[in-house]
Length: 423
Image (tube, rainbow, N blue to C red):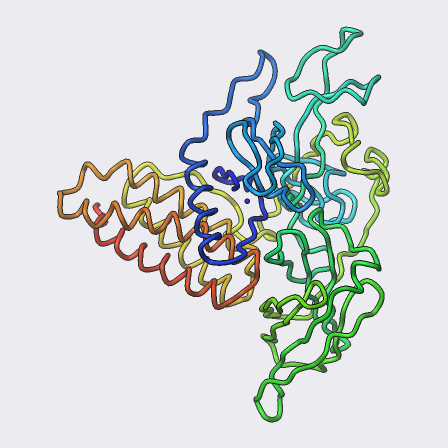
């Protein structure tokens, strides 16, 4: 999401796996980028550390190309442009209106903050046209202020309380919701998670496949266009309500499958205005023009009860037994997300497991030669399968996710056998 990653920060979320050979190549490229990622440069005294420079393609549809060095876009040949990307906590349906550096609650509507990827730069209050990749001093002697701008594939969070997926073309995005009225509704977005125009929405067609409660057989129900979204009346299904959609994003395109599993009816986020709204920019203001002065991090209350523990990054333990225990916990969390159909959340424990595996790799010299021959390739397979879990989680194809998890789980077992838990 090629992409670069770091622990606890999905630096770029949105790699499209068009087919297996290409997808595997991109995953391996992403892995190479991660292992070669330079350390964060130190910022000038008095400022925070700077996010590392990334080089991105600005061609529409190719924004998922992100490298760690200058060059040409591997997809369209355009010259890559430098940027700084960072993962921040913000309101799910009003990204970058409020920015925080840890979990909390949105002061606008009271919902839990979510993570998005944003472009980071510095500007001047009196001249917002200034956009620099380094902090500095403005012409009037004042200190530049940080600003966050929307990033393609930076926000893969549901906007209507449903389940959010990316299409294999790396541009279209969908969100499926199951309403108390017995209606399945599919919302349609672009790569910035903005609703598609009516013209583009008209190009999309699809079918929803559900189990007939009486016969237990699959039943095809056409998705009917209703304004900018598609929907189908499926009636009341027993929970967990499992179904899948076959979607063609353009006339004549091959169908893409998206799997959904609902534990309950979807709930639209409710806006609950608070006094803090007076310090935020109006919801209609574009995120790209939001100055840091008006989006300063708000105090983040403890929301341990509203955020799944599997979504909260934790430090890498210092001892091998603790690493192994946490690796098993992350594997179990991934399995739980798969069973619940929460495919878009898989990347968090998957990447935590990836970092744990790389930490264990530093202890391989403590093993005998025989155990090293087991551990080293197993760690490599776990890292690769973590990236596959992320990519397939974005695409919402359960069969591909399960295949990747089988590789992941097998690698975990081999790592555990090579690193026996020690007291």
